[in-house]
Amino acid sequence: MEKAIFYPFLMFVFTISMIGGWIPTIKMWSQETFRLVISFCAGILLGAVFFHVLPEISPVLGSQLGYSIMFGFLLIFVLEKFIMVHPCEEGECNYHKVGLSAYVGIGLHSILDGIAIGAGTMMNLSVVIILAVTIHKFPAALALSSLLVKGGEYSKKKILWSMFIFSLATPVGALFAVFIFQGLDDYTVATALGISAGTFLFISIGDLLPTVYEEHEKGYKNLVSLCMGTLVMILSHGLA
Image 1: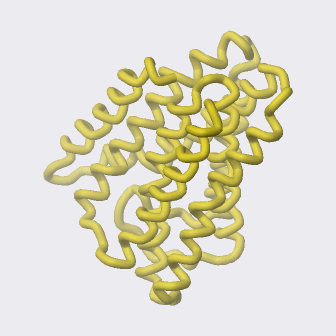
Image 2: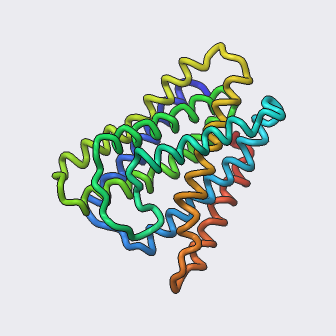
């Protein structure tokens, strides 16, 4: 991707994340609307992994493909289980205090998203990876900001400042990754993308898909939203 296009895309990722973090400080979304957004994001992430990333890196990694994917999957599992605060993306949950370790974990997760963008740029998957990252950064920012608002311990200014750092971490990670990956062999870049695919899989399966299975009166809409997200990834082959 040319720099003239790459930098505006990074600004787009940052802006979408900030909008997601800003909305709860103005008005909380209904659970029904939130579920639809989450279901669509799950479809986007699953589609990005299975229709774009895996077909691109499998010829390079061959039989070693599973190692990087499993590493990324377990990495996010450990972050969410032991470090990060869970952003309650699957619906209502009890209030969790967001401590320093949670911010560190969330920041690392955002940097990993940036590395995914950088690796994708090296293997002609920049548009797809940026779309996948952006589409799940929005509800993640929305959920995290909602958590801070509900907690009542932070002022609006402090919440927005926290979301600014959260939103900035991914573009910074992407710039760092592009700098590091330049000149490296395809195997190393493909491994980084495999790790990213593993993180996408865990986020979609562990955090987002439970929303689709929630039992409520209009649950079928979640499934439709999931399919729409997947369809976007199927139709976007020409953009990669």
